[in-house]
Amino acid sequence: MQVQVTMLSLVCTVCSNSMRVQATAQMHGLRRVAAHSRSYVVAQASGGRASAAVVQSEKLSQASGSSNKAMDLQPPRGTRDFYPEEMALRNWLFGKMRETAIQHAFEEYDAPVLENEDLYIRKAGEDVTQQLYSMEDRSGRRLSLRPEMTPSLARMVLAKRQGLAYPLKWFSIPQCWRYERMTRGRRREHYQWNLDVWGVQGLTAEVELLSAAVSFMGSVGLTSEDVGIKLSTRAVLSELLTSLGVAEEKFASTCVLVDKLDKLPEEDVRAALLEQGLPVDSAQKLLSTLAITDFTELEVAMGSSSPAVQELKQLFELAEAYGLAEWLVLDLSVVRGLAYYTGVVFEGFDRTGELRAIFGGGRYDKLLGTFGGDDLAAAGFGFGDAVIVELLRMKGLLPDFTTGVSDTVLVGMQDEALRPQAMAASRALRDAGLKVDLVLEPKKMKWIFKHADRTRAQYVVLLAPREIQEGMIRIKNMANGEQEDVPVAELPMVLAGKMAKAEA
Image (tube, rainbow, N blue to C red; front, side, top):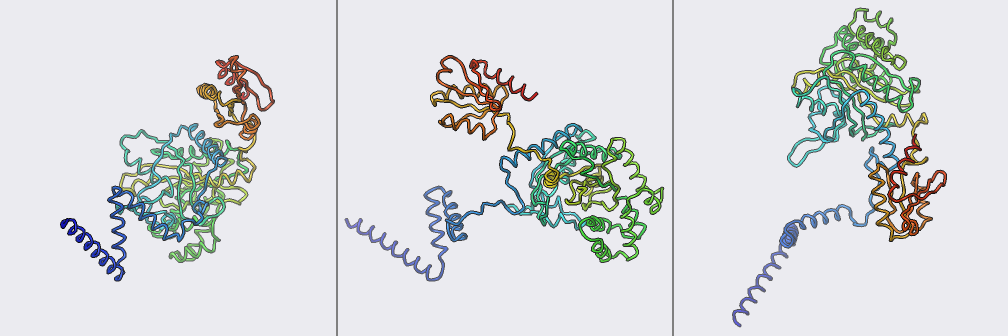
């Protein structure tokens, strides 16, 4: 009995001391001691997992001020949700891109959307280096969401360079991210169709890329009256700057400024060139030469033996042999802002002038050298999804995915007891290659046919007790209302035949 009293006294003493310690801690503002104790107790009770959740929940409640605060239902600024209709459009567009690439014998590849940040940091002061979505992981590594695909491709080629068979003809449709000012057809998140050719020194690589771009535009209903392609070579700018005495180290930054000619007034570009140190008369000669759109005038300005002029003339001759001449425009102001371009550059544009560049690309033979490898001839283009969709919408060329008969078969039943048979019929139809929508809940016939109209089903397969007892299933053509009963075993063959005939 005395032992029990002694133990009880000890417990009370501990509790009393604990209370005094806690009170003292509160007096001194050390509430974190109590918080730590609560987390420790929860961790002891649940193996440590619950404590993190409790602490996180408390922090979120304190940050929001109320657990009932309404959630912002909009996606982050500059990004998009793809509901089924938008997804159908995206799949259609990407399907056209893939078909074109495959017709030109390009192979598809992909890479992580998250890359090391230094893959994109270059010397030229390019806009892209200021537009990165960058972050640091828990190990202190600097990472970035990719703003473009070409550096990732270069990294991949460099990693397996010795084992690759050249020429490489690769394509991808990556999601890219740039924190930039949004305008019509320009978002902070977009998809971009990339085609690249590696290991080809001559201009045939560029012409092959141009052929693919033109083929794609034709496949979506665009013509040379809708879209033009500006062509130039950075060799023009290089020759001009050399003749004007501009230092080589200023070449890349001058390209960035010249690339803004279609975005800013010429006077603003002139002022930027002067600020960079270009003399007034040199800036004038540079801008006036870049405004030339005729080969005869260009030969007068630069000389008929100019390597840049010869390169452009050969490029136009090859493009004409490919049947592309009506799409092409000589435009020396096109230099593309990225520093890694080394030769021919091109840019697709909306001939009405309402939209920004539709696509762009060129030759970049020295990109691998910037990553520490030996240079390798390469050319490619990027074709964004946002601008082309805007153009197709302007021209009334977007498919309507909300009307017309789909290729879906709807399977329904009059009695829920027939669900096993309906499921078996659905599987048999899917095994035959058909797209099948099975009614998932008990529904009346009125609802089933309304759902068929809503989903634009081509046929309804209906299971009824009497027909099933006779080994038959009813099918209804939703376009003309015709109905017929077919043997259960023959359903896949009959329906597949009917739908194939309708497609033909």
